[in-house]
Length: 329
Image (cartoon, rainbow, N blue to C red; front, top):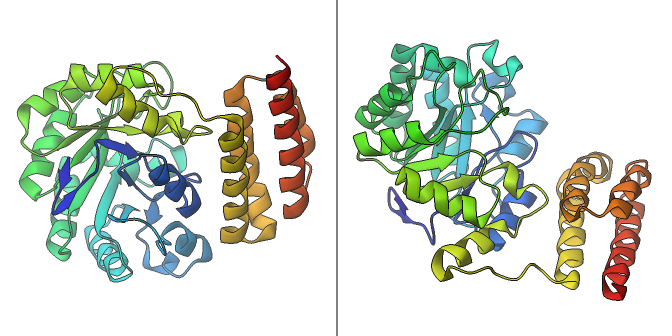
């Protein structure tokens, strides 16, 4: 798949997820086969540009190319200015968020709430595309609710505005993350536009990835929640698509070292205080993906830890115990 001048190594992308796709997680997923990873959404408000959290969200130092920053906002001029600012900081692709279903986002008419105002959508897309000399992409949902499925119309606006790739999550804003994603709308859009289309929603396994690609005809898929606690999903999907068989799961050593390295990277990126707290959810996802009851019970103790070195030590002990139990079994 190609976005602007960037030929991607495969057609597997990591979805932008608020509070999750920070630099350490993006790097980890890229290392394990994701061809591109989008930042978590960054506000376009000028007052927040130098905010510590904003700076962390948009940090790209050491990231593999192409580097993609996702912007959130409702004002065309502010969005254009934010795009220019992030390109100046090293962003090579600007993604526009019109898919976030969170209430606090939609209550200010941002994210997927923008889908209800097609004229504003066009104004934002045109302003950002005209402002920067890098590819601009767009992420949307199928519509506001099931009675207002207007993603095909938005896709036409995006194509006309110069958007160079379109990601569609197969749910409406009203659906949130409940129920099952539907892919018929994505297929309809792929058949009606010439720009690359990326399918998103409920892709949790190699089989699902293959089914979605075949059903929609999409150029690529985007994995979100399926990568939480499982950054190896990208290489597993790529292998399955190429070979038609399953790649072996990471062995105990790789599983353990990947988790510990990820936790250490989080500590280094955020500092001890914030890093320990952010690492907790990732440890939880890793442990829960094993479906091992002893590991899941251990989470309660690990989540009480407030020192980074002790968090790593406790996690290693829990994983070593899990590894030994697996060997004995």
